[in-house]
Length: 187
Image (tube, rainbow, N blue to C red; front, side):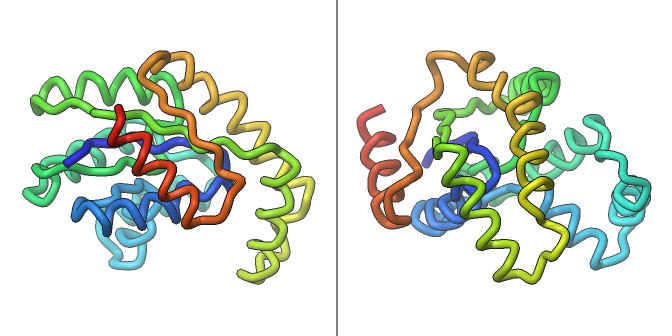
């Protein structure tokens, strides 16, 4: 089973594709955001730490994120494979992930990037904000999130270089899933 790093801008469908692929392959989809939300909900020490950063408007520091990923990748259900969704987000996180994987004697098999034009991303995110009742997700906020993605996360494509497989994220969800599965079978 594969060990996959799943990338793409907000609204590209990577979370949805990550869930579909994880179910299909029988491997866990690992998302720091999901882990943080669960820990906050459960009131754990980690959850309280993450909530303090969040409430202060500060991003969770890389050391904490790496610690969470290390703990999660040490669980028995990850031995058969995993999908990382939403991590790494920066080159320093990718460098730390490489060291972590080396220390636990694992490698990633694929880096997959789902591409969608900005105009489609903005439309998708506006629709999603309406569906979820997120009144603060204005077009301006959405564009800021995309700018942050391009500034901090997009450089990972250069970091991973020839290991990146690009997928067109504009067709239907089912077509994108099919394209991903075909590409990874060939790769």
